[in-house]
Image (cartoon, rainbow, N blue to C red):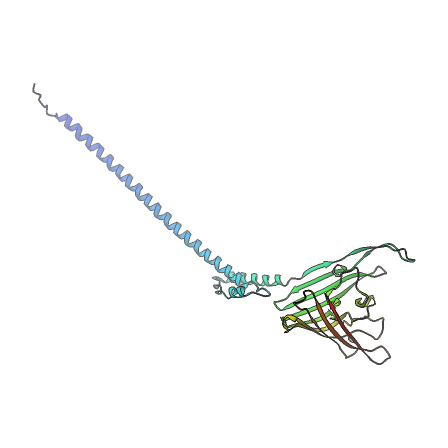
Length: 333
């Protein structure tokens, strides 16, 4: 059986043409929308990358500024009292970059000044004691006794200059509290061989006077030996003096020799009612002189042996002047 193809009619052809003409604009519109969306996304990506790049540049500049400021603060930090070889080489590092703006430079300079000031602040340490005393002797009573309150004040003014003071609050047998400046020294340390101090000091007579200072806490016993009693307690030696002293090592190898040389006002002698330590005015033009040498040999650990010579001129009221000499020779372990 043969099949015959029927040619399409004019109506069918017209409908096909119409459908093609309808879908073609729709496709064009969809293509245009997709193209515009892609362009918009590309533009947004470009804008985002540019914004991120600007943000990174701002952060990098800020990090560089912070690094420069840290370098300036480290350079302004004060040097230690005795830097080692490694520290000395570390301090010779590359100098910090200058500040980018004037306000930041002013702030860094102010910080350096505050750091220097904090290193010179006074450090106060205190020592005190309270005792209980009981006795069956006639005229004596059982009492709680307030001992010395010793304020030990120090300050490092610079690498070589230091301040030392010792302020003591003490009550007497009449229950009146008094204040004494036992030591007040401005010290200069050039090296191990030369140290100079100016002010009121403990005279280097013997070993005990410079090894054990005020406050019962610093004593090896409940009280000081009779020979080294303080002047206001009836002591016979010039325990304190006002003047200048020099001390240091003497090159001597393992013997470890030390010297002490002192020149001061000496002890008052015109009247027993006067203050023994001449803090302000010397009663004569003659100055007291003290010289001491002692050794701390490495072979015997803890041994100190030496001698001291003290010379002064006493001038009681309505009397001639009398030379006063004190020689001490001793050893201590």
